[in-house]
Structure formats: structure tokens, C-alpha cells
Length: 426
Image 1 (spheres, rainbow, N blue to C red):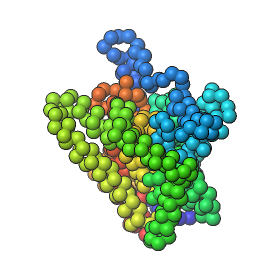
Image 2: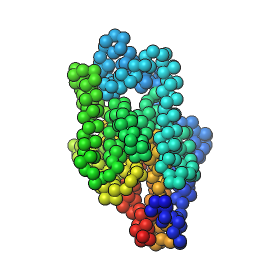
Image 3: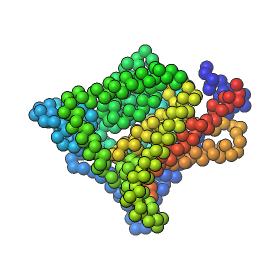
Image 4: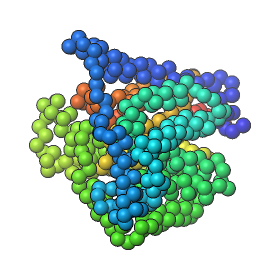
């Protein structure tokens, strides 16, 4: 029995399950964004929203990825001859899809995506519980994702972000649960990075002992070196072509309401919000870069606070706060971060919410603060499950919701009631 279990079994120690506050937030968001928008609109006609900007044919992103692999494999045409911002190794990983028809490839990637979501959004959080239990909040968070706009968007495009992060989460799980199989964890993590690059921010989860700074630095350096070397797997020229596309993507990241990156929010969503409050936006033309840098710095700061707290506590296992902060940062830092990335928050959000317990007895103001934090986090999370087409312009872009969740996670990392109770009881 670990220290936390001893605390829970201590006389007079009880906790208030945050599920009911999370469930209440879910019901409120469901009413506000769905029932209110669809049935209680001024036209007195049931509204039907086009929640996803569909492309013809379905699975367009997968089709483009397979076409890059096919052009390189069969015609020796550079996979970067057209816009392809995926690492060179991803071309090799997708070459098997060139052996089947596109409808078959689309069916396969859809099944893989759903399997990856089952792992990362349900099985992974379930295995983190001690003792293991299927908690109501886990079922609520997972099932809401199954019918969410973000998942529909990812499947419609034939994207594979869920696959990439499922591999990364599996690597993190194996690294902590089965140390002797760390080499398997490194392979899975490397595959995730070679698919989408930004799972690399989860490197801070590959730490067992924060005091072993030499071993941690060697691990980070080794994984970084291997992944950088794989960028050259198709040769020097293909690496240069890949880098040129990345620079071009950075200059033209596809800014629109469904891109919740720091850059897209600064240059597209923020002016809309300011205009709603009759605030002039002319200064953003010259000062937008400064605002973007400040917001980017805030994201890095929140992730850094999670890293510092994990270092100070040096707990065994996966830190739920750091897991959520690193995942959220990996979503908003890249200049291109479309809403089909939102399902990636499912597992980290479920683990975070299940890790929260409000102790009883507890001071009134602390209880109010903790309950308020749970409600706000849940409201922000469930708001991301609905399309921008069903929201007001103030809430259409999902960056403020993700940033708000990061702020709450970072704050609660420093106000963990169970750990403080453990110190008081020991």
C-alpha cells in the first residue's frame, strides 16, 4: 500500500468526487452549444449546422499523404515536390497504403484512429488508476469525444494525429510501468515524432527520477539525436526540401477559426474578439508579433511550471499535471493546429480530472476554489467538443479554452489537496 492509499484509509479522511461538477459542466455546455443553438434560435426552425468543412473526396489528407509515398516509390518523384510538411520517415511508413485502393486505405486509417483513441482516451487513463476502476468521469470524457466535432473532423480528413499520440502515450506508459522494456518505449516515441514531430514535447514524461540529471540528459540527447538523424533517411536533398516546406508553412500556416494555435488566435480570433468589445485593432498589424510572442511565452511558462513542480516532487510514475500541460502545449505551439487535434486531450484530461480529490474536512475557501477550478476546467474542455459553427465569435476559436485549462492544471499542480493532506497526516 503506497502513501496515497494510506492517506485515503486514514480515519476522518474523505474526499468529494469531482464527477458531479464535471457532469454538471457537461450538461450546461450541451444545452448552451447544442440545444440552444439547434432548437432555441430566433428563426424558430430547427437549425442544421455544417460542423466540419468537408473536402471532396473524403480522407483528403490521407489521400495526399499516400500520393506523396506513391510518387516517391513508383515514380522516383520527391515526396516534397508538393506541400508535404510531414517528416521524411513518414513517407516510408505510408508506402504500404499505396498497395491498396484509397477507400481501403481510408477504412484502415479510420479503424486505426478509433483503436488509438480507445487506447489513449480510455485504456491508458484506466491503467493509471490505483486501484483500477472505471470511474464515471472517465466514461463521460471518453464517450463525449466519440461524438465530438474534433473526432469527426479528424476522421473526415483521414488524419493520423490520434495514432501518433497513441504511440507516444503507449511509450510513456511502457517506460514507467516496464523499465526493462524502455527500448520499446523509445521506438514507439520515435515513431510518434516521425509521424507528427510535436509529440516530442512529451519527452519530459520520460523521466523516472528527476534527481538523475545525468541519465535524463543522456536520454533526451540520445532520443533527440536519433530523431534528427531520421530526418535524413531519404537523403540530404530531401531533408533540405522538407526544411524549406517547414519554413514556408511557418510563413503561411493556414490561419482560420478552426486553427487554435497561438499564431492563428493572435492574428485571426483576437481581432474578432476585440471588435466585439469595440476595441480598435489597428495596432495588431504592427504589434501582433509581440502579442503572439507573449502568448507563446505564457504557454511555455505554464508547461515549465509543471516541469518544475514534477522536479520538486520527484514522484514515481506519470505526473497527471505534467502529462496534460505537455500535451496541450504540443497542440497550440505549432503554427498549424487545426481542430482535428482536439481528441488528443481526451486521455490527459480524463487522467487529470480523475486525479483530483477535494478533501473533507477542508476550509470553505479552499473547497470553493477547488470546486470552481474543476467546473471551469470541465466547461472549457467540453466546449472544445462543439464546432465553431455552433458558437458565438467570442468562443469559436479553441485556443482560449485550451490555455485556460493549462492555467488551471498548472495552478492545481501547486495546490494538490491530497498531497498536502498526506503531509499533515504523516
